[in-house]
Length: 186
Image (cartoon, rainbow, N blue to C red):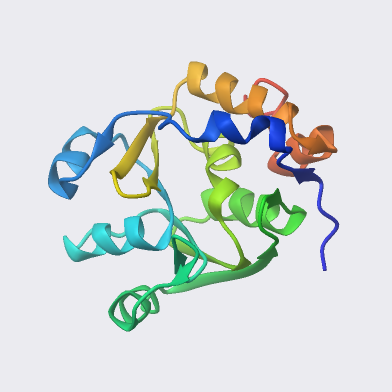
């Protein structure tokens, strides 16, 4: 198993309860408002994008929603991605493999699906850090909808600050992502 550079401390969990951006229940409206490219974190969010024939530049999935396996319809729809990267990432952590996969995926011209063995819930933080300014990271907020994070210098700083507060080697995480501590590309 990969060495885990970062782990979410219990003292930081509350900061992830509220959405980091506007919440959408209408996929079409989300796509109208979202900058490109789009990085989707979560099976259901990715599935909803695909139901309107939109494939995100990067999708990060783990085969689960609300700690339960996604249904067969969702699994089947998500299995049709061309390029796939498989990684391990334990719950409540951000692994080196996940960081490297995100960094590789955003530099790949075709759409990439990162399939996580474990949990992808915290992938939103590094996704914002590696995303192109003007782009969007979207993730699911349980029982509410899709959360749109516009990738701006401000959102990169917010995610960078959260990442620094996690237990583990934040400097190694920034290095693996190819960004400095403010979230800017090196």
